[in-house]
Image (cartoon, rainbow over all chains, first blue to last red; front, side, top):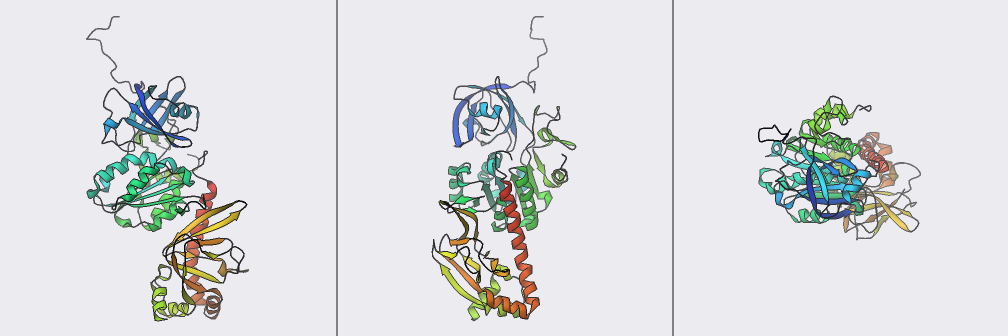
Length: 283
Length: 152
């Protein structure tokens, strides 16, 4: 049948990727790369959302967006750790190469709930990447918030992600930035200790604070516990979960935890909803 | 002495403690300072003091062949040293000032003696030490888990 103007078309099948081209590839750490993708059309997203990225001929993976939502002209930015075949292929795409993009998907960081409150951003390792769009948004609207603290932990000093930006943010006088590493040799003069040890050191009013937490799941559990110990209620904490996502739209069930789909209902969850699920070891 | 009593009383570690006890404790206290790079104590030496940091930062370190590993850094308002609490009263690691550090040094034998004389004082001190020790134990467990490793 010939395609006519009247023929119904599937304009945006959520399972069909749009095609973008790599504009820039930057090595952040020994195994972490940031890709800037050029899309034909504007690509709006909210902080904390993710895309399904396709390395053609290899496969597809869920990758958080790590760029600034207010600066779409910079391109679509993702930070990828080279840990498996798909992420390896994605992180080794060169400028000019094609990449498939489905998204943006998921519920992101609810920035608006933090207005007039203190803000604590607790990041571990690569967890700083999905939090970076939130940090951009909070800093661009700095007057809307009370105290802002960024607490960031990594494995060693050489694993500190976005180090130039951390130094840039630290130069601001309106953000309380604490960085620590789990272990170090003598040539590091910064803090050593797990990221949870930073929570008691940060200045914020626990009863009027919104906390955003992202990192490995164990780190988030302990991080949330440290925040709770300081008096931040679960209802004021938001955590971003990572699960093996496939469809990205809540159909396949690969990322299901209990009754929720991480791709559709998350990846960002309020902790009073998430905590009961995280405590079930079978999930 | 009045100045030391006030400093001891105002240190967060002793928050909420009765004046009677902080006055007793201040009798074991003295002001100390460490220059950047100076060791506060060395592994294996007698643990005859503990320190309440007033300013600066201290690294707790373990020396291994050809390298020194920093396990934890502690800063203002925190404490350094718990080995004075339990026999054989010897430091389990090195402590080195990372920057100019001011602290209150507590004479361990003096303090243990006062705790023996008044177990309520000992209990008050233990109530302050135990949460810190538990937190540091939890932190060490988290470090061992290597949560940022490739398999996390």
